[in-house]
Image 1 (cartoon, one colour):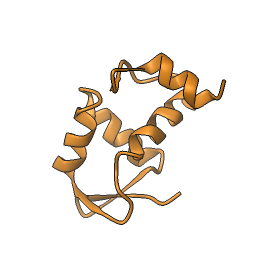
Image 2 (cartoon, helix red, strand yellow):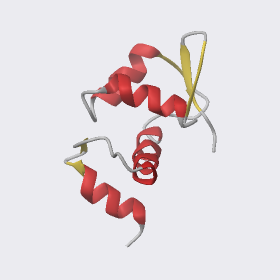
Image 3 (tube, one colour):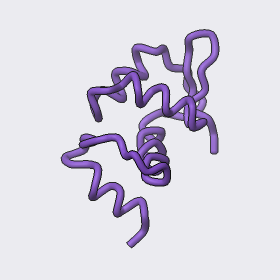
Image 4 (cartoon, rainbow, N blue to C red):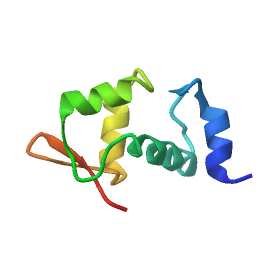
Length: 85
């Protein structure tokens, strides 16, 4: 079974993230799944990023920061965009 499938089964329930993984590889999979919720080539205000993440997990601040830290989202001048990978 692929790692993504294992992580989805272990950490998501009914489209919600149950907890943020501690193990880095699993965390990266979760962040990749979250990044897919953002359109490429679109600019997002911080409130829009928060709204997207909050639908999946209550700790949107931590997840927003992790998305930037791991390079899934770029932040500049208070706006965000999904990084093409």
